[in-house]
Image 1 (cartoon, rainbow, N blue to C red):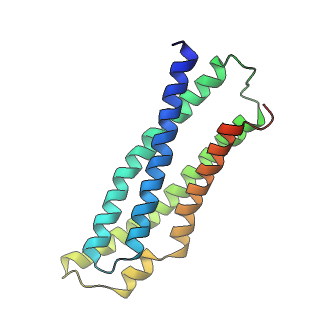
Image 2: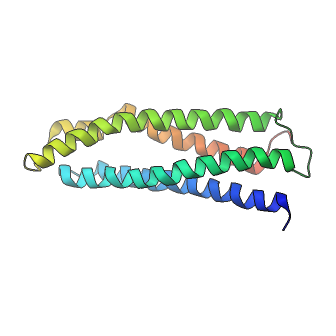
Length: 159
């Protein structure tokens, strides 16, 4: 295998980690929406942290090897191509949205932890935080932006 092929392997591995981690986080979040007990919500939100490790590793791999791929491509790709710039900007947007959603979710985790310590009884306040439309919009918006990046990587409009 040549350098370009190796770079592509690591870039695609990063993309799988990023998108797979996002899908796992979304599934865990959806599962939390149907729970009442603070201990269950705390467990599910805790598992999302594992998915965040995959998302972070995937982001780094996809970004670093993606830039290197543009440099090494046997095609006439350029850092100035619209699809490359758009993917870079969208990656920043996806991370900003996901990070903001994650910070809001941390308050939900703290509340769930307090409720578990005081008897693990269902709470309307916790339920409202789990169903917070802003947190959900930020997190799921991040996922939609990642899908847009995937589309750019596949079709490379203008290339």
